[in-house]
Length: 440
Image (cartoon, rainbow, N blue to C red; front, side, top):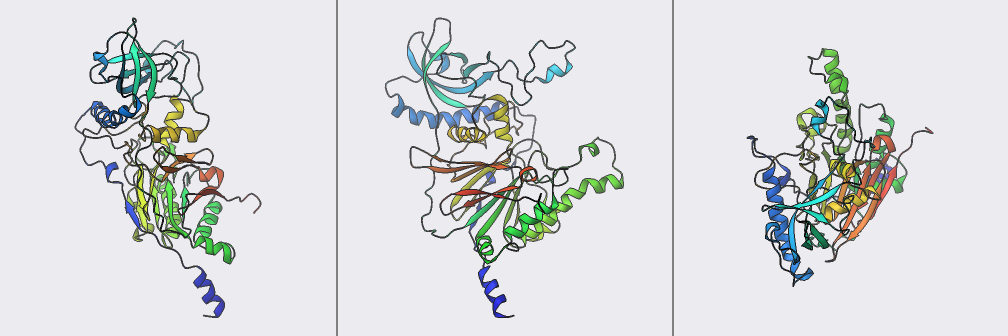
């Protein structure tokens, strides 16, 4: 080995980081026994009400707190409950069997908001229609728990004068000891097997993060990458094959081909650094949230490395005491259908302030009917909160009233944009890493 090779090997001395999984809360351990979804709503209200009650004395200390059925006409009070949004255009499964053509006006398929929508608050004692202009129905969705200050009107409605959201949860202190750059690469929407996937694009990405692409300076930066996270929709299975019929040997081969290609892609990464892979709505996993880990036995090559981790969706972990929390995008995509916001990242911010990853579950977003808890409650504020499979890249640094600082990230679909996201754990700064093959 000559001096040049020794210098090159010395230059690419990859940094290490400590990893801790916090995914236990998303594991489904209980067996389904026909239970209903009322349990998860009750658990959500119980936990969130405890949090909000602790905030009320600093918000409205002289206003009494009561249950919905304990209100008195004309007297101001505070009620805490779960929001329900009545939507005129909300899809109903019974409509599929209706013989009469609906007179409801046509709407865009991505959003079901109507000007006649209204809000209701309910607790275990009852429910009440909300009035006034303080709360905009277009912003909120069913499943959010918060406190309302107002009074009951003669018509029996609750006139809202003010409201209190839970806000950002407490955050563990960000470690200050790290003075060196360490990077995490965030990916989503590889969609291997689809018409939009480009193998050359994947190979450029792999070569870059493994240090086999670029000059000495670029390799030095690549050596500072300590982790890769793939946030869902890694493969696209041909839907025409999933028709309930027995598959021929040729069709079985077509079905497994995207997974084999993904395995090769993961092997190249896992051979050099840790990689977490999460399931998404298009991946071969359970449909309802939380999606359980992808079967590692399907990834015969990459799973032999201890750097390969099959993780659930949502996914929570710590790297060098920096807490990451993320989803493959279903929670934010569902919010976009039933509410409005200037940008997708505003939905991400709302879920954090509501302290709930998926407030629309189980109303419009499928989830498992837990009996004793709501796993989507955000009890500790992450330092990084990412959402996969979005149309475009976006990022925002959100700061809380108690010193919390959270990097919000929308990860675009890699197969369509050729963009990965690179986060620096030292200062939570991030940027888009773009690959383009049109001139190659």
